[in-house]
Image (cartoon, rainbow over all chains, first blue to last red; front, side, top):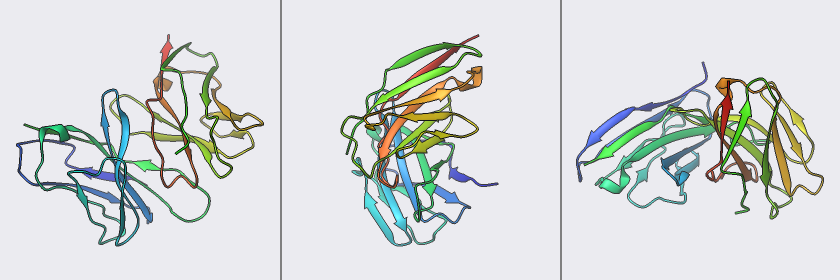
Length: 114
Length: 109
């Protein structure tokens, strides 16, 4: 089954404690992206990657890092989380070549930073 | 980025057609029109996309105005499961899709 898998789905942590949200896709997609969703603000893109070792900032990259060492994985790293990073996070992937196709989303990771 | 304008909310009766409008007056020639929806407590899911011609798939139809400055997502027969937030998004090749606030569709039994 084609899917994007995020872990953890829920996490409560404290300010300053480094954490990583993993994202993995099994569709051999080149393009992967992270979004955060906050009430009243919709989905905002954090970082995206067009392929292995190619990453770029989205609209709200401050406080986040990403890496793309393998095609299937695109982890989101919060080096020093702060309460304003409390949010619902979504990872997404799609093929990068040819006409635009479907963007597949994970089920989301709800993060609370105390 | 070219922006879209959608109503904040709409209501529909179950089993009736729903027409969700989207205005995108600054669309460029290479922008595709994408529609996604987000059901409660789930990630967004793809609905349909198009460039110039009307498009149909198993979920919905997309009607694109001749000048491409507006489009309409058509759900032919609304069900309770169609209650969601619907996003109309522009993107050239859809690499960068900027999601707005969308239209919250309520379906009345």
